[in-house]
Figure 1 (cartoon, helix red, strand yellow):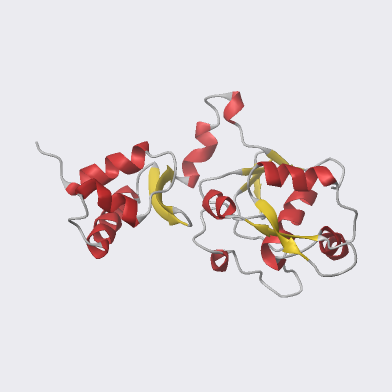
Figure 2 (cartoon, helix red, strand yellow; figure 1 turned 135 degrees about the vertical axis):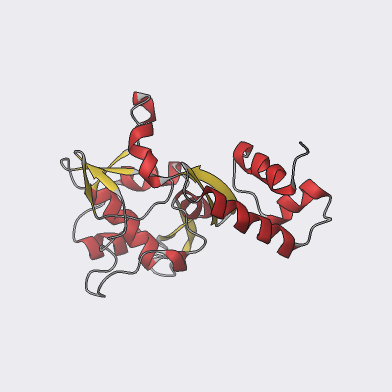
Length: 208
């Protein structure tokens, strides 16, 4: 049976190591399909995978296949090294401040959270490619201004910062992260909202 265009798109998305843009996907067909044609095929594929173990989603860098959130806890049982990175509540609060209030300086973060910030926390998020220096504030010392990256958007399943979960009230922003599936000793707790990425909260540990 000859492969359909959907089959070709599906194969490309399943084997890709990064999200693929519509422009890149059009190259599969020597640009014979229009942007709208490819989007229509992607929507059809998305509907097909919606009730299966994988999902087709659009993120900041394009379209990608990712594990269904409901399947994640089962997949972690296969290999210990596949368990998600553990983050303290303090680290997640720091990431939330940067995401919701960017661009911010280290001093801004400490002022908002009311505690000192460990340099290791920022370094950890920089190494994961989630935050970067986007400029310098024109004040004494010219402190670095921090913001999130496209990698942050992709890992958290977001097309743009506008897709961040909306806090229930302005008083709680940016710490009300209620749409996240986060594992805490086998239970779920409201934190950040990654799609296709699971964060595990450490309930104990020093603040950072």
